[in-house]
Length: 339
Ligand SMILES: Nc1ncnc2c1ncn2[C@@H]1O[C@H](COP(=O)(O)OP(=O)(O)OP(=O)(O)O)[C@@H](O)[C@H]1O
Ligand SMILES: [Mg+2]
Image (cartoon, rainbow, N blue to C red; front, side, top):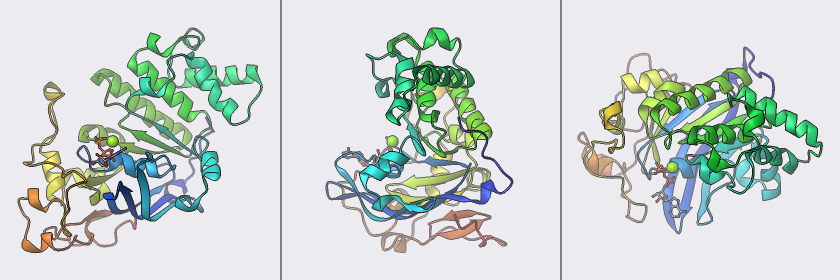
């Protein structure tokens, strides 16, 4: 891992700026214009029910959208570069080295036929490293720093010989091998047991602290977001409905959808049950969406104009914004964070 990049001013430097991002799939709108930014070294969460467009939004950043999907508008600015305009050859250099990803099912991301040590070093080879001894040393050192016990014994094993948690640690090792500035973690703990989840979350927080790697952390689980993120984006049906500091958004939610999500934080005993108790469901992308707020049909406080146009963002607290006609700004709000 690259040494700590944290400096006093680092948290103020913008790493990623997404503006009015639109993603289409087979002619339908999956992401309908979202804007947010991320600072260097920050852990930013994205939360929302299944099908809201969290994964597509994240995948579009390093240019990893599925074949059927396409960025149809907006901009993704990473440091000084516009990623939506970058040719695949250039994107490939950024992927892995600068922006890395980990996913929900580590086992599916690993090749079952290749020893895990080789899969870690292959990433280095892919980027031009040829020295086998150096690569093995790097893999061992990285594995150790990521809490993989007895890496000498572990590296010759195949993925099926490892637990889910260990597989995810290996995936994290692969993602971190070039010391990326941005790690996109799409539901990295959803498939794991609760006790293992906590360890992986702790590991990601440690990586962030020690290397300054920013993390875009996607989860439908609010308690997980609460545990690791400083700021959160709340998505609903391809739109960003609320964003702000986690403490603010979760204690003073301004959007009825966020309130609904919060009302359904699952206790440990309810694991596996649906998370959301808001009546209705996320409309599938194939369903015609009215021009207004996509949540209006499920919303208890909707007024007629909610169905006519999507509400502009208003400041409802320090750095806390909501796209809702029913939300009201509080005194002292309005300066925002510009993010
Ligand atoms: N490869 C694909 N082909 C067709 N439709 C897709 C594809 N990938 C995603 N979609 C659709 O795009 C919408 C957004 O999907 P996305 O995977 O971004 O949601 P998500 O918020 O990540 O959900 P989850 O919490 O289930 O992971 C959904 O309606 C989904 O069905
Ligand atoms: Mg997803």
